[in-house]
Length: 215
Figure (cartoon, rainbow, N blue to C red):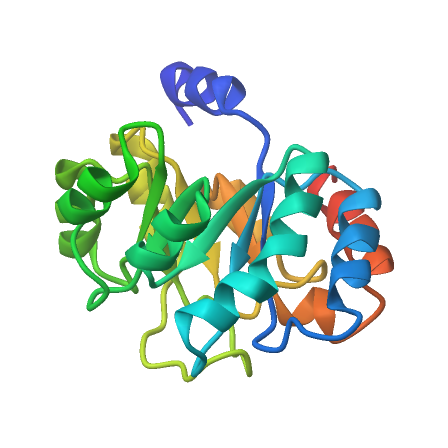
């Protein structure tokens, strides 16, 4: 490692957690979210629901949005620019077929946090960056049951991005307290976590992530 690289690594902000919701956020989920956020710092929460209309989605989002605001956690809507605008979300996360960064910026304003899924593609990541995305997401890095895995990302993607670009990158896909350290060392600015938190005791999982991230 050169002195310049060492200096760059030292100047990087510590990796943060980016928490993604399960598909079912009804029932006692608001209480679970509050427990998770009480357990340790989380930078952002992504509201990810499928197969319901926008009215019902907005209803489910309201208490979660309030909890996030209380904990100073950014509330990001998955896929839907329209829903993000309707509820005044802090941002939107776009898949490759969910609209453009330009459309999201026009609808949500210059202060909105706009992220883009880039799978394992350097080309898509550079395109998103040039379009004005606030962050890009690579994955999946590990097997995951949260969603169908069509793309596999490797650590060299994070190293390449971190060396050349200032826009933050998110590592997603099967991330756990046990496997996250290589992602951090390779340059992930955020760890997107879902199943590892909600499939267990959420507070204990958040604490375990923070313990691993400080190694």
